[in-house]
Image (cartoon, rainbow, N blue to C red):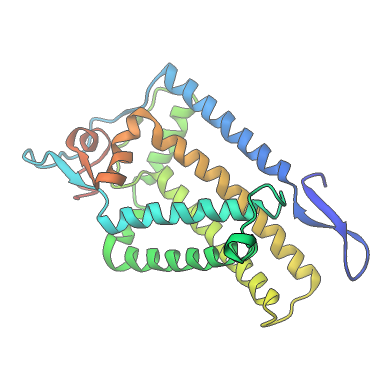
Amino acid sequence: MWFFKQARDYYGNAPLSQQLAWQVGVALLFLVLAFIGYHLLRRALRRPHYAAQGALPPAEANSFVRFKLGGRAYHWGIFLIIVLLLLSGATFFFPGALFAIRDTLGVSWLTVHVVLGWLFIVFVALHILFAIFDTGLHHMLFHRGDGEDFRQRVRFYLGADAALPKHGKFNVFQKLYHLFLILTAAVMIVTGIVMFLSSELFTTFSGDTMRLQRLFHDSFAFLLLAAICGHVYMRLLGARRAKLRSMVTGTMPRQAFVREHDWRKWKP
């Protein structure tokens, strides 16, 4: 198929899919651009508005803590790791496109990619632990009302004049995005570990197994790149900039809280 790069198998000499074609990544980025164009057009015709229902926070509260210092450091840290993982991974598709680091650092981009991969696993493990024991895992779980939130949001983006329900710390789309990140991270970690174990000769897998690991690893890396581009776009929207600033300052103003959030569902 055209979205796979084929090469002759080392053992059977048969032409097999060995790597995802870089054109797939370009196609995904065009899909992201199409989504952005539609999203901007929909918001130009009518901006989203929220239902009047929703408990208000105490009158004396003018700002609210959205992200603690540790959460903000984690967010920017793993963002940097993912960007570097994508850049180092790109060298497998475009050899020589990035500057050679072996002469300066004495290591290859593959070694850098593997080290970053282990750092990514450490960050994911820390995220799970903090979500369970500190920041509150329940904020990312689905609750009663999320189904209506999803229905109203879909109706709005399909052109209906739908009032969006006020939500807790995260809306249903953000929860779905987080669920997608969990799935993507799990696939990339498992496939990455399998390839690492084989390359370091800790164990031996069949050629077909390794080929499938590479294809799954590449596919989900491309999906992750597309998702991050969409996430960055959503954070840069004017109505979302208060939340973007909260990832730097840690707090969000009362006006932004009252507009979208329900005090009964989230008491920061």
